[in-house]
Structure formats: structure tokens, C-alpha cells
Length: 301
Image 1: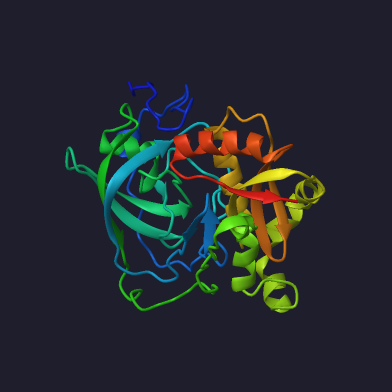
Image 2: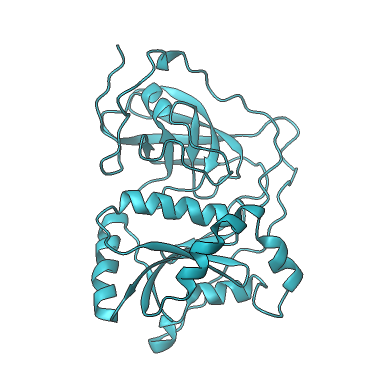
């Protein structure tokens, strides 16, 4: 009988009540050449930190803490556009190309699995990768919630020099002292990506995938709200923005305010709020910093 105890890193997450009895028989992901996702590999910013995903398949090694996520995310859309399946061998990584493959080894027991990277995350300061429940089970750390792992990307033959994704340059958010530091950093990011009005209208139009149309009502209502907001992230990809929103709504389930996606200028900003004052927003920002290790930026509109 498969163990059904919890242990997931994410609050109130777990394996669920119906766990297949054949978890040991679930095969590793099989590396193969796939076209990289057009939008999921573009630069983005989460909680004030800029990320530059890989835009080609190349060697990568990393050691750090891995966690796993289960029923709270099961069936939710990932950055690649596919629903998350906690019983498949998949993973989320901040910068590895999507899709790509990696071997993950549990340092404490030597067990290893091969996973397919399909999502972005984790966005905790002390973690390097999120694995599916099945992968974590195979590595033997389901009950612990997290463990130290060695990660190594797998580059299929003939892919080392191949670049599939059409992406824009990495963001370089401007930093200024005093009041200027309170400006919308993601607005600056959009300008540096050439997405501001008049900068590159054809590129901005091409940046928004068809999936963005479905989110239009939510983004429109969010744009009409006024007050102080916490900016949690910004993406050229609507699917990446929605993936972050879903993750944070579940992980920060103590929030009373809604998490909205505000689309404009070819960017999709993930906002929390509004708050009536900077003081109120600061209190929530500090709680988020304590929970995730990163602090949101402030936006007034």
C-alpha cells in the first residue's frame, strides 16, 4: 500500500486521498528533442528578482534544496500550457529551458530520477527546483517535504548548439535611490524589453499568446482598481503570469486581497491589492518576505 502521509513544502498541500499503487513503476521522463516554448522562456521578474531563462538546451549543474507540490496544483495549467499531473515525472525550475530534461539526485540516499521541466518556480530564496509528487516519492523525500539534491540537465544529441525559442533580451531593472526607487520597476522592464508604446508595437502585439484573450475580463477589471499594490511578478507570457498567480494564491492562502493580472504594454503584471495606504501594503509585503524570502515592490495607480 502506498503511503498517503503529507509532507509537501507548500502549506496544506499533500498527496491527496487517491494515490496509485504503482508509483514505483512510473517511468522516468524520456529525453527527446522538442521545440522550446515560444513564451515560457522569456525574461521575467518575480518579487523584485529578475530571471533570465535559458533559450537553448545546454549543460547545467546545480545543487540545492528541492521540494514537491501535489494536490493543490494538480490539474492547474503550467507555464508550458499543459495541466500539472502530480503522478508524472515533471518539475518546475526558474531558468531551465521549457521544455527540457534533467536528472535529479537525492544527495542523502543516492536515488535519482529524470524529469521534464514544464513550469516556472520555485520562488523561494532557499530552493532550486520543485518536483512532482511522483518524482519526490521516487527520490524518497515525500514525508520530509524537501531535501538536498544535485541537478544536472540532460542535453539530447544534436541539441547543444540549437536554439529554438525566439526571445527578447534579459531584463535589467533600473534601480534609483529615494522616491525614484518606488516607481513601477516592471514598467521600466517593459521599456527595456522594447514593449512600451511606440517602442516596438509589432513585437508587443506578437508577445501576447492566444491564451491571454481568455484572461481579458479579469485583467480589465484589475486595471480599473486604484490604490497601493504589491507587485509580485511580471511576464511577457500570460501563461507564466497565470501560473505564478495560481501558485501564490495557494501558497499565501492567508491573503485577504485578490491576486490580479494587469495586462498592458505587452507585459502581464501580477498585482496584489489594492491597499488604502503604503503602511498597510508594507505589512503584507513583510509577511510575504518572511514566507518566501523575497519582498514585493510597491506600485501606486
